Image (cartoon, rainbow, N blue to C red; front, side, top):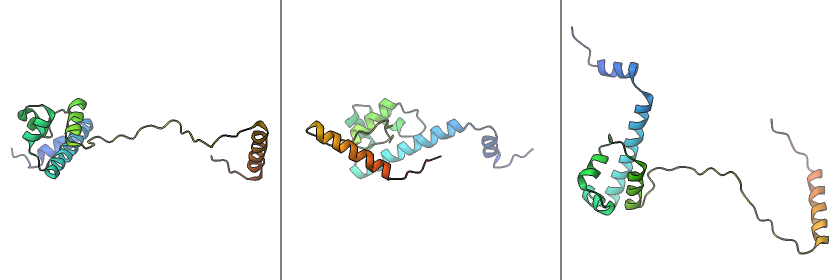
Length: 128
């Protein structure tokens, strides 16, 4: 019985794991960023290993794209190369704005009343 050339592709589509696909995609993206950074710096993998205090064989293994990079090893590469390999947006819960200070209570009362009047004079739409 002859199997088609796409039997592996078909099997992966049917039985593949999206988490593994995502893992490989992310790993390869990190490795590609490192490759470009090495090229831009004119460094070899051995020079990266030296900058990280690692063995060249270990760095070569990381850069295959199939090795499970730890966050620690990724940070070591970032520090050695001076680049950001994993960009995360910080979550901003609050933003504070300094509006200035008012010297005396009378001025504070007047400014408060002016603010209240200005708020009441504007129409606001309620977002739903």
